[in-house]
Length: 266
View 1: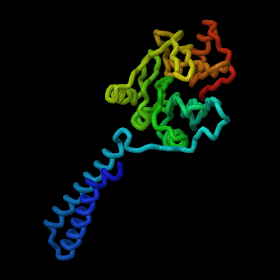
View 2: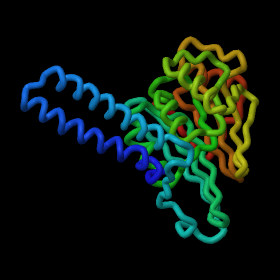
View 3: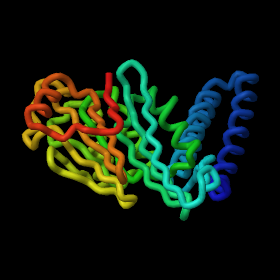
View 4: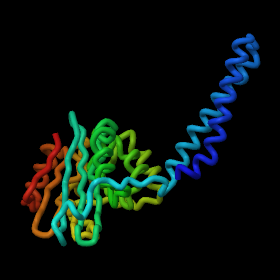
């Protein structure tokens, strides 16, 4: 989009340089009223320039990350599911990336986006490195700012087609922003509880084990989404920050917790 953007932005940038030069002359000859006016016009033009840059760069398809992941990275006709977990000091984000070397197809699910620090320093660079430009789905486990604080940023950058969350009340201060972005970008939202499943096109199945439909729990951790990811003959259990109350409920309900891999929070 750079060529089109520059047709509008370069003339304005040239005008800013001219006004800055006029400002220097006014300062030299001590034309204070004119100097103040020119400076205000220069600032206004600079704000307009940066707003145009933001507008053009945010257009759908305006930029594309090609990444470093290619079919040559895998053996012929292979399918790979990579699960990357990241986060510091209670923050958490998980990238589930399915890739087929046969046709270059891929599916991308993100389970929590972490806080802004985790997103900017870990998740976003990783997704760009992989050449990921769209996420198929974003799963929000619970209303912990360290888990979903960066969700609005991820949704704006990668425009997931689906947002999955539990029916429990989400008291996070960023949740209204998440709801607003879903409405603005027309992102489908599913509120899933125990017994519900959602299937990816790649054959992966996400089975929800908790919470119940009532979504009761005093703390956010007591309302955390617990899910099992199934792909072929492999299973991965995600319990997020689920605490004692959730674990007790799962055991009492005799939920099938068997899995090849258990990924749990802090």
